[in-house]
Length: 237
Length: 337
Image (cartoon, rainbow over all chains, first blue to last red):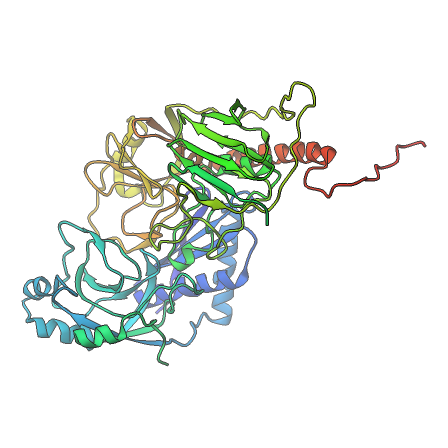
């Protein structure tokens, strides 16, 4: 398998989008995350930061201090550097997330089960049996975006998105899974809720995980929820 | 710490700065002043660093009372400014005496005004910025009665006869209009819209009342995506123009969610985003295509204009001793003596 090639696209006068192109999705993902980490470490004047997702990374900069042309050259330099030294991501940390499924905690659980042709118990079993790699941080507020459980079908989004989904909501949509760090509107199917606090604005970084970390869900009941409520989400290993 | 500013009529006002540029890497929008040019100009006119916390006032009238002598500057959309009841020019440094009220009324043709106070305010910061983030609930929203500590007091500078204001720097404030011509560059996904992408340049769009700091919703002819392939979530730049529904265009501003799964048709330039930060519901917009090189040149020209203003302000304040300790100062010896 050959290494992905990088395509760089203009995205206005203050950002560039770099896309890793190859048939290997894992290689594309690790390429853009390695590049983002390299850019963050390089700490170049005028480059604000990088937002890596699945196969692309958005690099934002101040067009007074630097320019799209210079940043493009710098990204290409980064790619050559990574080819030379290797772009290994750091060792993943692990997070264990307790979840109450269904009822008021997960109002869409039954709908998801019906749509998948599964029982509620089977949906919960599929959601808890897998380890999830955090692919990227998404909206709102550093949500951990993960590849979804091994359901038979993609999960359709809600026809009428909710105006407010609580912090800690555990949701699925398409082939993806997520936890909501903060209250926000949302169109994903909410199947459960964790009592742990994911986002802490008084702490830096605001969320305890970064892309590349690994997360698992386990089932708890409402009594356990009340006992754990308000504790911070922390890495187990 | 000096005597505080007392907010008497908060309207819709916040303390902000030029934004949380480190935020997007952590999944937080950049936020910050929506008209960056006006915000920077206000701080420069008040003798502050560009990124100092300042007041952003949106649409509604605002009033505050000084309890110590202050130097302030008001910029942004055209409005009626009074200090101690006297009509006072915007886009100039203004001395405010202890006990005087600063009132902003009738913001017109634009949406946002900025008040910078010399010395700025000590306020909490998150990832290096005080800019409010409505999603995570961070930031200082002002209410009637809020007491804002100020960091510096300055005795008033005024012309001794007739009490005329001394400062007349004559900076040419930008023009504000109710029809905006917005420069955009091709977005990274423009080809997905095929020939319909051209509609963007042939239609006039109207700013919807559902617009806010996250994005402007624009009614008009809508380009249509020609492909149906699933789009992976990607980082989207501030200024990105998307077509998420059949009703309106969405033009993302500084409060935008950092990632999204919609193709980006075009991207508004940095300078155009300042104009958009002043767009009121009902204002009309046409788009003009430009290049990244031209957009960069336009942005840099605006920055240089502000640098010239900074030079003027520093000269004037230097001569008056503003921002330096009181006392006798040695003037440089004249040549030839």
